[in-house]
Image (tube, rainbow, N blue to C red; front, side, top):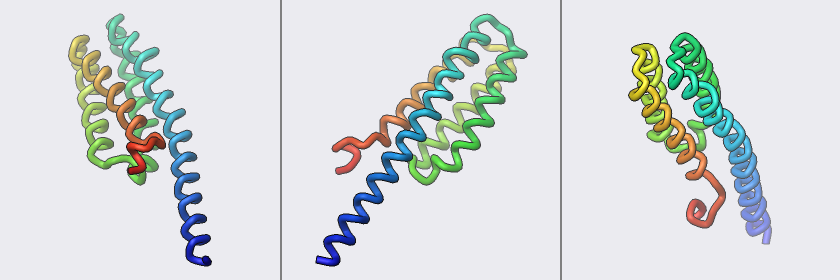
Length: 127
């Protein structure tokens, strides 16, 4: 009986910490996605490159701060792909390329959404 109680308590702790992380990741990933949609893409489409460079640097800083936590929970290759996409987007913005920058920023949005959906507490993700 003691082993059953310990196992049940362990499962509750694991699921509770998963739920806390999902809420943390949800708000942060939505913030990053919002920065891309509302700020960076607007600057890219209006070809305000100085502002876009500043905004992508801000996004990069926030991503790297949060990435330290994400590496414990998210698939490492998915996190690395997002890193690569952010690096590409930075260079596309610095080279003043609207189509390449907007395409890569849209790719980052999709990757962030995929990271979040992959970690939600669903039966597919549990089993």
